Length: 490
Ligand code: AMP
Ligand code: MG
Image 1 (cartoon, rainbow, N blue to C red):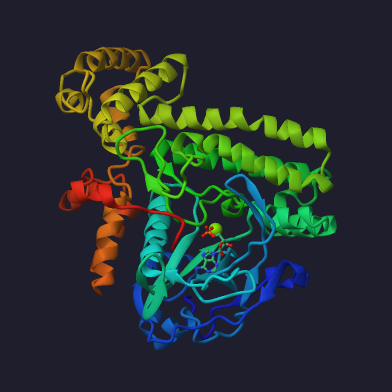
Image 2 (spheres, rainbow, N blue to C red):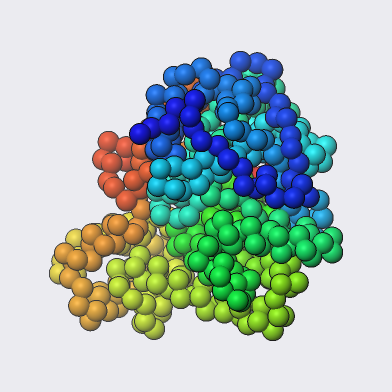
């Protein structure tokens, strides 16, 4: 059975918490006519929502805040957070509203949120709007991450308008409906800890555990286990980011999901020419959130969370849990990178091969995605694939040496081409969301042409497949892409 707009079941467990956790809000519709830019059939399927609802005018009305469907209970969540290392005591959903949760027939709850739906008590003087450009970037990237197998929020639909929104230039406003089992952030705990409202920290922890970590609910040490689980999920998430070359750009604690999801896509970027110091956010002048800083920032953010949970924990136990992070991250990262290199397991030689390869890629500014994809085509028995690889390096003799050592270790690991190649092709994507690809989609959409969204999504949803007709999406950036700047302003 598929739900229609008449019977999509809404509840709102977050709104059942005490009022201190949120504000009831009236979303502000656009002044101009909203138009459906894209409807995500795959995400509709997650909700058991009949995809034909996209043709029902009530759909656009409901997800552009013009109409309230039965059971919707719009609220904005309160949170705080460490932004660029400094504690900011009052943040919250400044331009997002939670509509409620829908439960599919498998019993999975999805919290639906509209981003860009006007001011809330947490807007801090800003307009509560999201521009088309940033909404497209979030929409595309969350699908790309999902296609790569990385936990993320998803996007149900994108709705545009002719309403003017003022940023560095005048742009148009859009609304993105996104979903996740929960949008609770590390900063959701911090706000009550720093206000000395420690009882609220407990209420929120109990809520998150009951709703999202029910296996912990009966454990006497459930708060510690909760922290340990978030540490584990975060370590794994960031290892996955590093393995695909994803930089989040604004890893503030208010953008860190309590469920270990990639959350709040702003000035993110996928690594192209390999550079561990890659900074994707043009406002990040000191490189606090540079690519190679992400694992450490993960630990900093988890420490902020642990601090906020101290009313519920023994300090020594919290410290020990945090001390486990680094090893867990390394274990996940080495495992993923070993797989990218075609080994089932990491060992010392694999780590050494990895480090030397990355050093050579850095020196040659080799394209991260294309290099690992090309490596999948290397043959153990012939020189097939080797010439094309070699050409990606400036110091080819140094690369030849590496390739010799690599082949030797592959042979020793007893993986022949027939098992290794398909495994590598299934772990090294051909397609990632390069900034210039998103930019092309944005520029067309700003002219009213939305067809490119679906074309690009087709490859991003299955990034390990070849898609020979769409191979242009795998290309390295054109020269004009050097001028694309992404920052926090969206
Ligand atoms: P972000 O950098 O997008 O994670 O946003 C940080 C905080 O600023 C969050 O609490 C947002 O809700 C809020 N915010 C960002 N942009 C706007 C906006 N245009 N209007 C109101 N609040 C905003
Ligand atoms: Mg945010």
